[in-house]
Image (tube, rainbow, N blue to C red; front, side):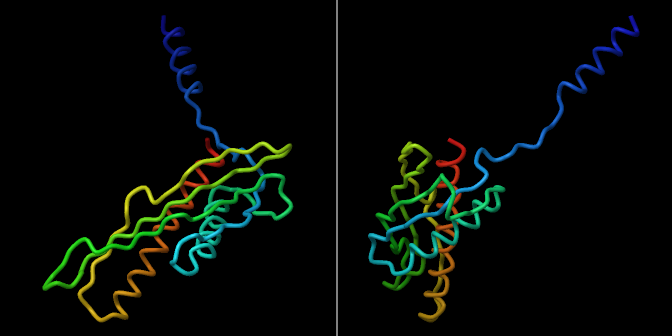
Length: 156
């Protein structure tokens, strides 16, 4: 009886082992990201965020990879959501686009990606402070979007 209990405990202990997951792709190329909005520079900033996110997930970024992520930024919204004395003091940023993950032999996976939740920032300060917070919030929104793109392409 004691041997059976001991054996069950040993089997349960070793059957619940952890293992390191490897990414499904060794390398991915980040292709052209087209910005169809009026907000200047989003394509470059999203490309940088995508490269960082791929590397965080253990995927090498290589222009010669048979796998490629490309896409367009279709929508950028910056809107005031709260006012004080008829001046906007709280803002919301929302970004959305369409992307394609291309594999060897012409296989394609198309999907939409966006900032899952709008990013917000508040400021009652000078215009320079508002612009600085806007840029910081856009970068944060693009990082969130890059996470969703990598998740949609690599971990689908």
